Length: 422
Image 1: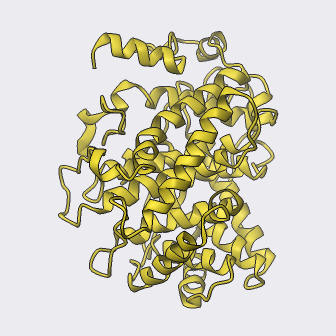
Image 2: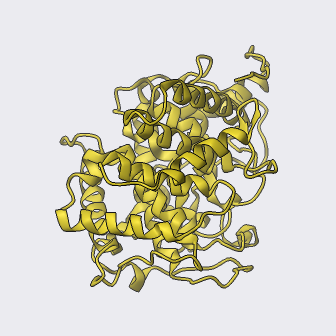
């Protein structure tokens, strides 16, 4: 990218002077406190980054031009599956993280103008997604191409989280088309791992709107995930434990949404949801401690290119006002803002504005797994759930607050950590 483009983009997002130096500086607290980290700048920064991520997808799909204009890159080890899956991946994953922001009421602020535009584009895109006559009618797959089950579930997750914002405004024909696609997708058998929650999420949405459901796809998932609990806030991903971020990308948050929907309909007990929340709180406490004083975090396991989407449990608890008692909302804001400023740099985006395949850019595209493409990257939107909280919420309004590792490595007191048994 040419220098003048870098400067223009830096100015747009308020990046000037905020990139971390290559050489570590001894007192990280001083660095962060010298930066403008007021509630306005942090929130405005999050909104600007989310808008930059979302706009290429929604501005095109709202006009039925996503397939036409989205430049899709595929992993160097792409397994040859139907490449049409990329478009549902981009759209479904994006709106799962975007929806809480869209649900806030409108006002006269600049932020609200962004929200109104993205909300309208999302609703228009939803109509294209299930219209067989649209160029952007999504590929819903079959039992030979299973990937659409994943990304249809993120659309269902968005509907579950904010039905008043995304589901109820749809016209009756579009609703019927979604119901048809969600029921038809039952032909896809999930793999025996986190995928069972994709099927359960779709069925739980159907349950929430009074449609007939495949009860086995819900109950088997809940009971199997329970068997996979290995302790201290962690679930295995299948019969064997995997040390990666899939507890964050999928397992904890989707289990919570499934249980919420089923508790609301009397199919599960509140104690099941309470237990799942406690486990997610414990897992989130690890996530907060993953963030280094410099604003980096533990990059490990498959799907590392999904970036900050891994922090979904932590930010979901922020959105639900259910953080562990020892974690203050502002310390999560400050920690994740620091992380985002390390990740969402010019090389993270193509010159056309699409997300790249690596962690910090295409020079790391070898990190992209065999199932990954440009659309896959939009799961990073899940980190932006706190934008569903109003600016007056303490997550945004409280002053700069140090996170655990920033305290630890600047010689300040911090709480010791012990395993828990739920």
